Image (cartoon, rainbow, N blue to C red; front, side):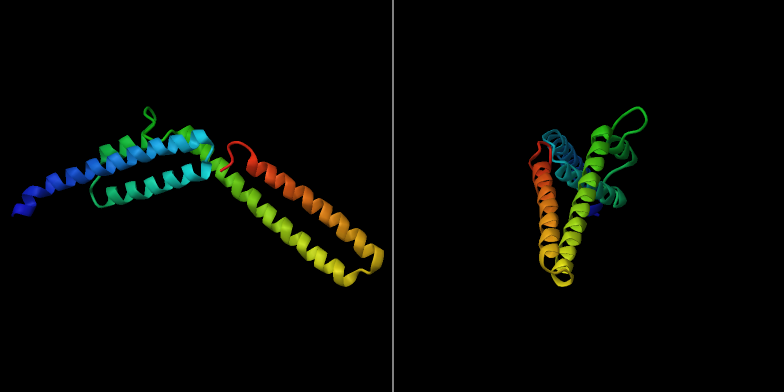
Length: 152
């Protein structure tokens, strides 16, 4: 009987703590976004979504809380939609670029090995020099991208 009387208080405390956590995450998301750390911002948003969905599923958060968190046509919610869209686009773009780089490096490596076994003499040396030159250009471009402000 005593647990039944306390239950609304416990649920309300959990609700307040959960909303506080999500509000802190929203502030952290905005900071990471402004710093240009898009992967960190995306991680924070994904973590917040998981916590929100779990809390809503077990009854800690209500329908009004869903409106507070996600917003509607008139209200934005605690995470800015435009910032989230930019974050997702940047993270997806970085993942694509990283995958392209990985595949390019594999291609160059396979071609170098092939040249060592299939070509002789001067043709082999020239092909290896050309591939190494292009591979170095790509490595420099990648290094410049990673040093650029707003990257990760």
